[in-house]
Image (cartoon, rainbow, N blue to C red; front, side, top):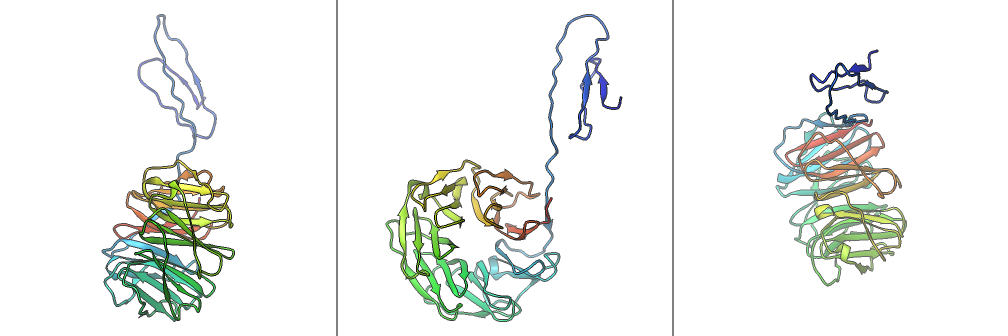
Length: 334
């Protein structure tokens, strides 16, 4: 039959019959004597990637990506580059923004009001959905990293152990220096229920339950590295990712942390679509997916070896990742 092979020993053979259907291999002697037969069975379906590279022709490294809906999104990076798409990432146009600083974070409160952060105290605001951008003066000159909002309360993480905080939708911003033993960079934040978290270098996790007015810190040896991104499913359960493949999870509000062995690549950003399904990107085209709150992860085919700095999903079957050398990837689900 089509999937039965008589092996004569004349040459190596390879049977590939659909890979997910049964294959019969018959070994039939054709003469006398002794010898060895080695059989290697590789079973399974070759990995299929839902990610494809979107060609863009801008000389920059992208640090952030943000989508308002299936069609409209933004990507920001080095040399003051800010791109906008209105057709789901097929085409990107460069927006005029008066800076050459690295742009590192993007967030919108609604379809019209949005912000972009950058190095050297750079902050821009749009009131028309990203068509035009105006510089906002803040009282820090440190690098501004991530920006995140919950309703009208927002947090920008900064260098020098600082944050910028607003409670009026970004009309005004107040700087706060968070006190801890090992000063460093505050790189990212996470919000859940009525609690805010801030983390970065220095080995501390900051927690606030009053919209960021007062912060408390917890310290753990597993936090000692560079924490780049995090997500909290509840006030007790969260996951943090960072340098050299650091991936840790807590189920008791940071009292203890469990190390999740995954990779040695730097992990740059976590993004959860819901409380079970999430994505993780990092250096050298690293992409992982989880469907169980980060307890286990499946490596994905990214079709790139570039460093990926940011990831954003609009739905389970539509997402984007951006990074080094103008890399933009689009996921359409498999």
